[in-house]
Length: 299
Image (cartoon, rainbow, N blue to C red; front, side, top):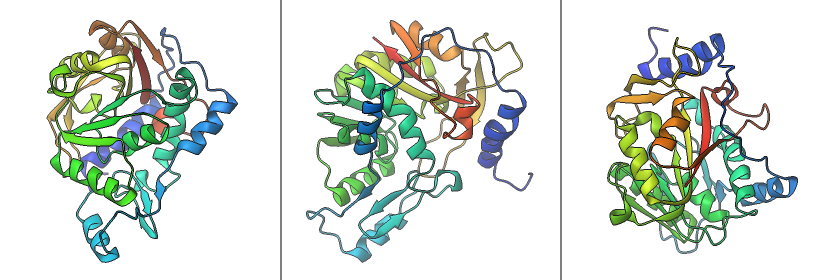
């Protein structure tokens, strides 16, 4: 174990060690999102895509594409024409691996709330990485999907993917979670705050900005802190924040416990907070053990 990089130790500790040794059986008092109907599940399956034919508008040669691919860190796997680009980290790999499973955890309840698609809705993704979730929102019918990321290289990677796929209606910009506001990005029907809350050192400020730009509801997916205090006691746990070289690191982050997230979301102004219950066992281990959960905050 001592030879493993620190980020791998943290991953193993959170998802395999402490999460299994002390599974949090305390249930949230917040209501759960209604489960998706079979019809919506079928629609969600049709919307999802991480395999794309190369856009006719792409002017890059196959060799140029392969060279550009090598210049980025790949958090999400994709298939571009004949080129398969796997995720760099082992536990993120496979077109039907972790992120495919996460999609069917996240999207069906959201689509159920929206009548089966995101048509006529606008979606803002804060912390968009390479734009994977922005793309899924657009494929599910969202009219306009801007994405914001702090890392310039993440934005360059997201735009590179748009060049390869030809998807329209998506626009990316370099912006951190604390700079998001009506004056910088406007107001959007739905906001995505996925995989970001446990990376920030000023979580209340980030959530205040999230509330400001959300018109209808926000989706917050986060790793959760475990502690020795009773499960119903909200906790913000100080941890060293280590990410891969392409992502910005705050050096430290305040990671919320399961009971802290709804309290924080209501504190910044959201009227109701729901959580998305696990629909089955076909989910990554951290979701199964509630070391990671998804919340929907309604304005």
